[in-house]
Image 1 (cartoon, helix red, strand yellow):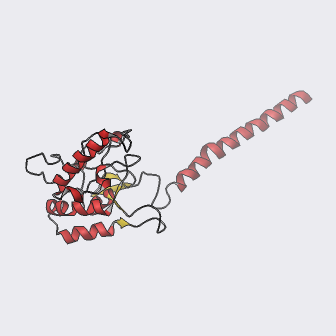
Image 2 (cartoon, rainbow, N blue to C red):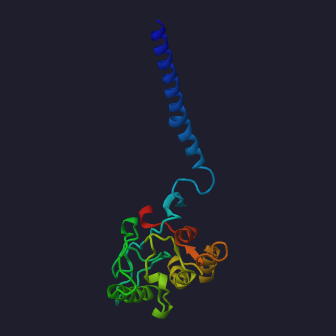
Image 3 (tube, rainbow, N blue to C red):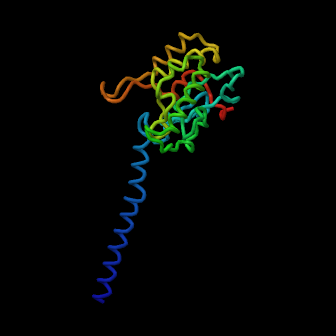
Amino acid sequence: MTLVFRLFRQSLAGLVLLVGLTVLLGVAYPLVIWGISRVGADSAEGSPLVVRGCVAGSALLGVDPKAPDGPPQAGGTPTPDPYFHARVVGSGEDAFAPGSPAAGLPSNQGPNSEALAKWIVRRKHDIAARDGVPESDVPPDAVTGSGSGLDPDISPAYAAIQIARVAKAAGKPEDEVRKLVDAHTEGRQLGFLGEPRVNVGELNAALGLRPPNCG
């Protein structure tokens, strides 16, 4: 009886420990972490940008919206394009490649790459034509991808050359659009880290622009 009682007591203790740890680590801990992840503005929901009831993108990922009819064609009439655009994505000379996270792949081209130099020349030409500015006004970040390929921010200089096109397509005064750009321009982190930047998704959302997938 003593041996049986001892085995029963040890089994009961093991069962109690199993149930206790299951409740603590399998239920209580996940619930606490889930609750913490949803506290504050930067919750774990992907930082969605909602425009008129439609999730138009993320504040953390540079998913570039494209005008339904595409970019202006060489020698043709420019297609009205009301969006501010992010940096180029993927690899190749096409500055208007689909702005999808799936396209955010590195080009694997270094600073001495002749292919990259050729792509930059073509991208600069196309972006200048789209925004109606001289090629010399196109800033470097407009024709080069970021390290991740999914940078949501552009330089104030790149935003500036897009203001006239966006204002005309959206039927808004340029001064109004310029004020929105200024309001969405962030300075260097801690005053000295990085460069001033403009979040493209947040700027388009402030303009009330819904991407084509929102209908």
